[in-house]
Length: 280
Image 1 (cartoon, rainbow, N blue to C red):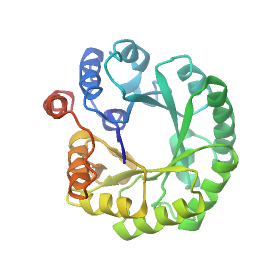
Image 2 (image 1 turned 180 degrees about the vertical axis):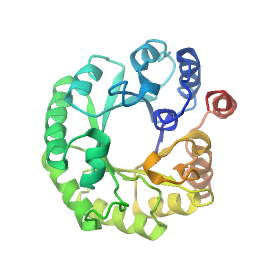
Image 3 (image 1 turned 60 degrees about the horizontal axis):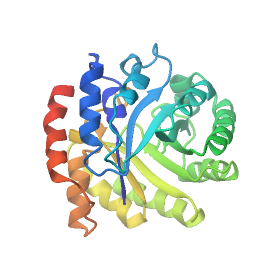
Image 4 (image 1 turned 90 degrees about the vertical axis):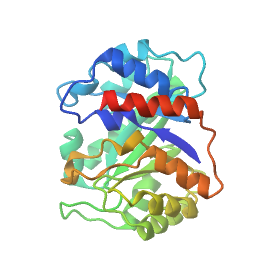
C-alpha cells in the first residue's frame, strides 16, 4: 500500500496563514518519514486558496537530497498545470474532477464537461513533460446536492479517464459519508473493471471510523491511500467540523495490524507529529 501524506489538504482551509518558513520546516520533516508521495501544495488562484499562495517558494526550500518521497501538486485548470510542470521536482499533478455537477461548479467554476476537457489537456501536457496525472473523483461516494450518484457513475467516469490515458484515479469521499461496505463495493468494482489502473482512496472521516474504512480499502485491493497527520483538514462542504482527513497515524496502525507494515522512519514521524501542533 502506498502511503500518501496530504499536508496541502490539511492546511488549505486554515483561517490563519501558516508562515512559509514553518511550512518548509514541516514538509522537510515529512520528507524523511518514508511516505511514497507528499501532496505538498497547489498551483491555483491565490484568491481561491490564499493559504497556498507560496507553493513555489516552499518548493524552493525543500531538501530533496535525502528522500525517495515524490511530490504531488494540485492544479485546477490548464494554466495551473502549465505552471506546475516547470518544476522538475514535481512528479505528480493532481486534478479534482467531480462526479457531482454542482460541486464541480463550486470547486473549479466549470461544468463536468469542461473539467473533462481540462483533464484531456493536462494529461497531454503531463505526457510531454514526463509527469503523471492523478485524478481525484470528488463526491465519489455521494453528494449533498441531490445530483445523480451511483457506483456505476463512478465506473463510467473512470472509463472515460482511462480512455484519456489516465493511470491513477482516486475516488474521494469529500463529505465523509462513505461506509466500509460502500468503500469495499466501489473499489472492488473499479479494480475488477480496470486492472491496469492504480486506484487510490482519498477518504474523509469522523473520529473512530478510520480503521474500519482502511480495512475495507485493504480488502478491496486499493493500492494507495491518502491521509494527514492527526486527521487535520477535510472539505468545508462537509458542514461537520469533526469530519477530516484519515489520520495517518491510524492508517499506519491499521496497516500494521493487517501485516502490511509500511517502512516508516519512526524518529522522523514523531518529529512531524510534534511539529504539526505548531503548524495547525
